[in-house]
Amino acid sequence: MAEYKHPEALATTEWLAAHLDDPSVRVMDMRYYVRAASGGSFKGVPGKKEYQQGHIPGAVFVDPMSDLEDPEDPLSILSPGRFEALMGRLGVGSGSTAVVYDDSGGTWAARLWWALRYYGHDAARVLNGGLTKWIAEGLPLETRTPAPPAATLRARNRRALRATCDEVLRAIGSRDTCIVDALPKAFYAGRARLYPSHRTGHIATARNLPAQANVDKTTQTLLTAEDLASLWRKVGIKPDQRVITYCGSGVYGAFDLFVLYVMGYENVSLYDGSWMEWGANPELPVEMGPDNKTLDSN
Image 1 (spheres, rainbow, N blue to C red):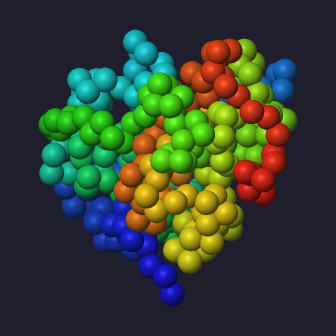
Image 2: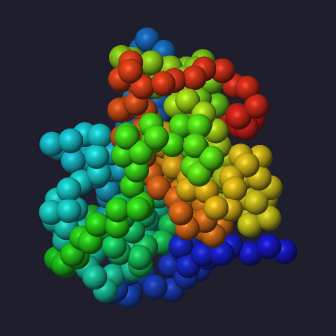
Image 3: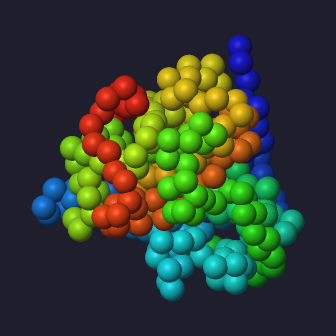
């Protein structure tokens, strides 16, 4: 049976349960929910209430949207200084192993996994199966909010992990780059509107692999290496191509990037601005329709 090329990017529930008292391990709860709003659009709701009702012992809550977006540039991840400050508050230092989880297969948690790697911290893991698997195995929860000791993490920009709008524009139709849309099929095809003021559809020439298609719907664990290889084969990524992933605001795109890394793809970047930037600019090329570039999921 095929194996993950980078299994170290995943934390098992068994491993985390055995390391809850390890001071070098920092756990972050990143639950977040998307719900229908008026006018056929959608709104995001942080899972802070659910966190307060029970979380993995020692876990601190992180909003994958408001905590990680730069207040001076909502289309971007936090600036280096602000990211350092956030990690200091969360107790994540240079010697820490950061474990992130949600209850959606890791599709929200991977945003912080990517941000940590983007800023040079490789000791980051996504909890495989997240809170769903943790609870199913009868592992402990707590309701208190921990106060981790302050820590120091120096952000070192890893430029190759982040793509700009101009880079995506140059990648359209390029044989050297494959653009992957990580949103559900309805958004990619233009049948649903992600933001009320934005266009519908997808970046021209982008292929579609919804982030949630990588996860077993029952256990919320990552699909096996063999199943992932079969799933992604339909996208048609060439071994020597760069891959740029995107979604609505860089969350699901970060999960597709995470999955590709686990599978062994090294040359993968996240278009951080995603549809929030692209869909708002009428001068940037957009395509509609499912055609043969869309995988049937969600």
